[in-house]
Image (cartoon, rainbow, N blue to C red; front, top):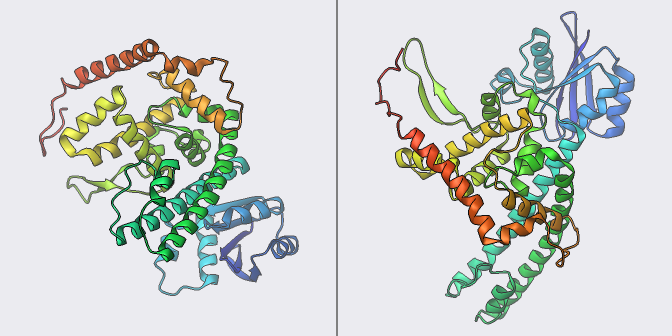
Length: 403
């Protein structure tokens, strides 16, 4: 078996081959599809194993080379310490290190998602970029108003209908007025693009039972469920919930040396940062909703503060999520009317007709008695959980666990 190490960049890739302990340089290959295909036909065989680092274009390179070789391996660059801390560092040396690490079995690999999961990740990232652009433009408008002593907008949305009417009445210089109008026009373009992207994501949600199952969790809407599902991919690659927690970077860092005690610090923040942020956002929403998760949040917040409690709740959500997906079951304390309303909002975003004359399952959320009955059920579960954990005795710092 020949091992091919590739140190890929935006412009070109340095390639070396390791065969029977001997390294051979195969030269530089331009990072263009036709050049990579020509190199694969000319130099690679179906018995080769190709090793590359995880970069922005690694997925495309792996997909292109896969038909020409036996296997393509994507390495985790953060864990390839021999490359990161090398004193003598060239592209050829980096490629050789990748090949040698794989040959000795010490290469930390990265899971390569399928085409659909990659497309879903791109859509979630695309929406996030559009939202950030919209926020940036709103902040620019706010800075213009602040510079000219304009009071804060009394309406919730500065660029909504009421906000724009209020904005048109404010006194600012003509050049600033023209700048505000330009920024509002850019926001309109971004919001039109957001509707298109969210409609495509909503269509994926309606066709994916896994995403709909994630939406049964409290505080999880369409975008959070889609982002988490895209980050996880196939949940079977995580043998236990702790592996998923570590993949999302929600596990605490641990430092221990010799026979001394282990010191736990902040969360590692490794892995999929976007999914981690979405879960923390969902945790804040779950802390405001009745249910056992709110009781869990309140217990941690009383001892450690609100922010640590939110991260701990996000970690709890990820563990519950692992059990839900592996056991193929919905959240046990799901509120059916609220879930139906969530799914109806997804259908509307996907472009389905409103049908005002027809009452579907989502209409139950508008019935106060039905909504109150569901809320009373989860509130009872919250009280039972709080009563259960009230019997726990907090262990003082330094006290050993009972044998």
